[in-house]
Structure formats: C-alpha cells, structure tokens
Image 1 (cartoon, rainbow, N blue to C red):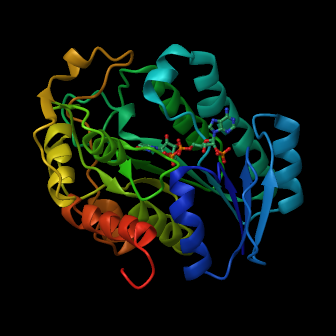
Image 2: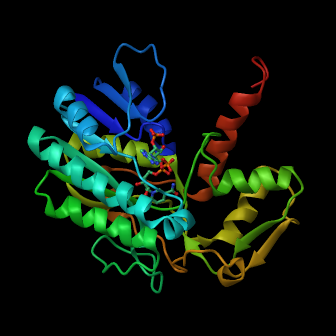
Length: 304
Ligand SMILES: NC(=O)c1ccc[n+]([C@@H]2O[C@H](COP(=O)([O-])OP(=O)(O)OC[C@H]3O[C@@H](n4cnc5c(N)ncnc54)[C@H](OP(=O)(O)O)[C@@H]3O)[C@@H](O)[C@H]2O)c1
C-alpha cells in the first residue's frame, strides 16, 4: 500500500508517521514545505509547495497513492479571521485540487476537520448535527468538507478538537500552559469554553484503523472528558506537579480574540469508538502519557 501524506510537517503527522511505520507495511510519501529527513527505506520525502496546483498534480500522479491523508491546513483560528484569502486557499482551494487528483487516481482521501464548523450553542456534537460556523476558520473548514463530500471521491472526514501531544515544534494549549507557568507568566483560560481535548495518538490510531477498514463518511475523534479550558489548564498543571495559582478563570469575551469561539463545542465520539474498536483517552491518561513522553525525551539515558 502507498500512503501519501500532505502536510507531513503538521503536529498530527508527527504522531501518525511513526505509527504507520510501526503498525502497517505501507510505503509512505511525505510532502511538506520543509525537508523531512528519514533513512527509513519505506519513506520518500518530497519538499514542495502543494498550493501550486501543477506541483500537487505531479506528486499525486507520480506517486499513484492508494490513500491520501490531507493534514495541510491553515489551523490558526485568529489568523484565519484576518488573512481570509490565505485561509480559503489552504482550507478550500487546496482541498478542491486534492479531490480532483484523488478522483483521477482512484485514491481514498482522508481529510481532517473541526468542531468549529458548529456554533457552540448545544455541544458536544454528533456527526449528523447541523453545522453553523461562527468564525471564518469554521466557515472555510465547512466549505472544505463540502468539497470533499460532493467530489464523489472515496473519502473520510475526521473531525477533531483541541489536539495536544508531545511535539515541541507545534505549540498547543497544553504546551502553552506548561511553558507559561514554567516562566512565571499568567494563563488566562476561558471557563466558559467547553471541548473534549484529544491526545494526538488517538487521532493517529483512528486514522490507521479507518485506512485498514476502508471506512468512508464522517467520524468524530475526541477525548473522553468534556470540560472547560480553565478546568483543562488546572488539570495540566496538577498532572505536571506545577502550581495552579497562575491560572486565571476568565470569560472568552474578555480575551477579545479576533475570531469568535464556539462556547459549548466538542464532539460526541461514540460512532468512532464503536466502529473502530477504540476507547479515546480522557485528559488524565492523555496528560500522563504526554508527561511520560516529554520526560523520556529530556531525561538522560539511565535516568528514565
Ligand atoms: N490542532 C488542533 O487542535 C485541531 C483541532 C481541530 C481540527 N484540526 C484539524 O486537523 C488537521 C491537522 O491539524 P494540525 O494541528 O495537525 O495541523 P498543523 O500542525 O497546524 O499543520 C498544518 C500543516 O499545513 C501545512 N501548511 C500550513 N500552511 C501552509 C502553506 N501556506 N502552504 C502549504 N502548506 C501549509 C503545513 O504542512 P508542512 O509543515 O508539511 O508544510 C503545516 O504543518 C487540520 O485540518 C485541522 O483543521 C486540528
């Protein structure tokens, strides 16, 4: 099997790539704006700008993948609100081109989306709930989903939310909390913004099971615990044995962010858990796994 990963430098790809190598026999082509070095004979690494349509076409047509995993996206919600044309180009136009070349090669497309396609009035949300995005990022991601669904390509859309993991190159909410407290800086965490934070390895494992089972349609992949950002920040601090005194319980409105946030967001994941035979991690087990991985990385050998 040949798997083509677009956006191979993303935080999700950092978890997915080693898992594919460990759990499958597939050959993997990685496409990124930056060189990804690997001496694994099953990996081919391509440095390219996939927003250039001809470049993308050449890559897909020469690779002839069985599966295309699209992790390329503009994911910074506030930047999307401001730089709308860049957001549309990555989250919609790129997806149009990917579906076109997947159709030409009969590849199974796995595309990623977000709970931000919902308005956050009544979350957590199931796969068939009606989207109503309230930010430009959410609107563009929903448009990207619609491109995939109407393309006629064999496709899976994996929606996730508040992803965290051990990759220091990809600062996420957990790493922001740890870094801030470590440096004595306050953490303003919204007590009115709810989600079910997702440990990145669960997304990687769910993706592999979707590939193996050739599942199509929409799947929600998120953690077991539904809680506010403030509660999450406090559990992060406690798990890493740091004080919670610097964590302030604030409202989303007081943060005055450029983009609106769904307040009761999050995803109901019973379909994915039942169909893929998984139990997604709650925040305690996710954070303990993360602590273990970060400690493994920093502790000297013999002291792990
Ligand atoms: N992170 C979350 O909390 C979260 C929550 C909900 C949904 N999602 C969805 O999950 C998917 C993966 O998210 P992620 O957090 O793993 O992504 P990420 O770490 O933000 O990475 C996105 C990747 O997109 C590519 N990219 C960004 N700007 C580009 C540009 N101008 N031109 C070409 N490529 C560009 C880059 O790939 P290269 O570095 O390889 O060039 C980048 O690493 C996305 O579809 C996102 O919407 C994420």
